[in-house]
Image 1 (spheres, rainbow, N blue to C red):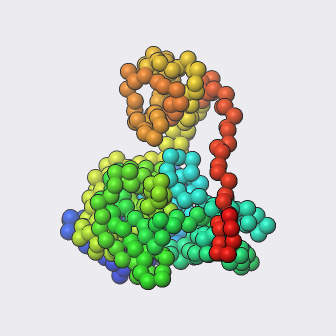
Image 2: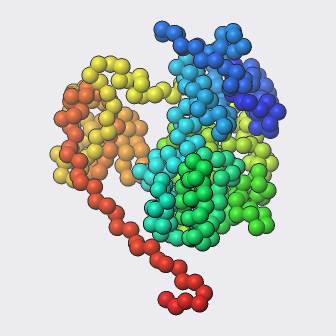
Image 3: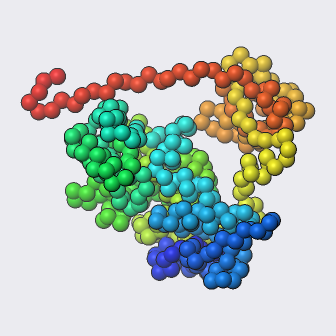
Length: 399
């Protein structure tokens, strides 16, 4: 198998280990500088060029796209996808995970724990946002940043407002995020490959540093991951559309809080702490998946005129409740159920004998007109009641 690793740094630990693991398994592997690949578009023939010559099309790629080249890097990955080359991490997945706001927006609609977060454009709204995330101390984050860069801890409201105002004046947009006190200076990284966590470490900041990144001197130790954390990491990776990633979680009082899903996680810290061959596991996963690459369902299936993909909700009182899938007659209406989402679980390709329940979500493919007739009126969403923020009591004051 021919594998191309997209990396601008041939000599870095992660790239070297991946090349070594691929060669040990008998694969033909090369490292290509992402910025030296030229995208070529023609009628029915997407292609890539390198130094003026057509690139030898590989069986698979492994993107190692740095934050500074996200835009062009994801364009290159997308071009490989159009050429039907397998990639464990899609261009969309990389783009979504790289933008901290976008990734949290995506995760927030699912049953995934995340730190309470606010995004503010106008400085006049900073005070209200601070109160909603729990007040100071508060974490301030740039939308894009890696290895702890652009992450600031502000211990007083006036300091937080000054930092946000300063960053806004330099055209930087930031997130305000609840400070999870019980996890100060610590986080958990779960390394996900495919649909399993292959290794997990706890990273602990050293000295006065509150950021636990290994690149900032954080100490990494191997841990046996709690099943709840394992499930959260795998679900977060699946939601983001990444098959090789690091999921960083805080250990909150209410369980795991996903901070970030990293599409190009470093291998040095986790291999050093665990002694495991993570690079080899990544190469093995790619080799297993080449014959069955993932596809963009909407891009492929909606080409058929009049057909599409829809999410059908089964509300309380629906006549579908209590019926088996086979008895609904959906198949006779040219509608196929791809997945059934029930509570926090997903059932793929559900059997005809499965009985539908209230609040099931059916991801369907079929004739659009027929699916429209199945769509119930969406109930008006009720805003969840949130506890009012409490003003912390400082020394010299009484409650």
